[in-house]
Image (cartoon, rainbow, N blue to C red):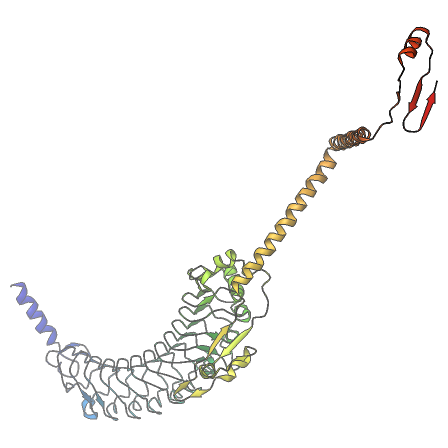
Length: 505
């Protein structure tokens, strides 16, 4: 028999496998009580499936779900309706499916769901509504789902979460609200989720991170809030999350973090703060990062002035995993340099002050020229809700002038160099005097002899310049007297001593 004919016969055989308690629908694949009618371009639900415990209708062309569609399917424990064109779900569509534990309605065109849609499903564990067009959730949509553990709502168009909508979902462990349009959260939006361990809020439009939005989530271990528009991280609730181990705040616009925020998560191990607008981190925050084993801080606007000293010191002592590229954004002289290299090269942290001056400026105040300067804690009080969102806030740090600081450091360095040179000369003389006393003595005698010779020379010069009295004989003999004097050795002679006296002989 040709291979093609064998495959064709096998395919027909698989399609003809009978469904226990009924007949397997044409073109469907049946495995005992499990039916797989996938990719058949069906527009309706197959009939006479009363004994089925599992039904997959993926990748068909079903457009609506009504109560009559599931009559007789009381034994179903899982139902897959994803990748269809469903845009309408009747409120009583799942009326008789009390044993259903898993329902997949993802990747459809559902824009709204009636309040009581899932009320007939008390045993539901997993519900997937992702990749739809939901714009709002009815307040009691999940009422009665006490056994629900996983809820997927990502990639919808949700703008807010009703208060206490998950109140009855006390068994929920996983909640995914990522890739929506959430702009704010109410404090009681997640009330009742005592067993929740993983919460996804990434890729929304949240403008503030407030841990007070997650009260009494005593089992929470992971919080994802990357890719939002948050500018500030605060905590207005006195609560401690003992099991929270991972927080992802990356790709936001965070400029300021309240100093006490991380004190409420004492066992935090992984923190992602990369790609934000942080310019510095306060010492109190660094002191609360005692349990961290991994942190990401790259892609921020680090200001390499003395305000970065606390962070640089902490990084140099951190033993866990961190990203290596932490670059300075300002000032211009340090732009692009690694933080630790800049601190060392520019000597930024010599005699660094302990207290950092902070300035808080809101966009509204900045527009009117008002600036608030004060303690860090009171800055949060200036934030108020405006319209549909929250007022964006900005915290900046006023650094000292780096150029003037460098000039002062140069002057001080030059002065210290001169003093050091003088001390070296004195030290050399002292060592010479101690180690070579004979040489010093000879040197001293040489200097004394030279001074004595110089004084004698000066005295001789003074004597030579003085006027000396002269003694001479004024002898004027006539011709006769001259002869007598020569022959007989006598005659008249006149002696004169100038200028005082004269003598006659």
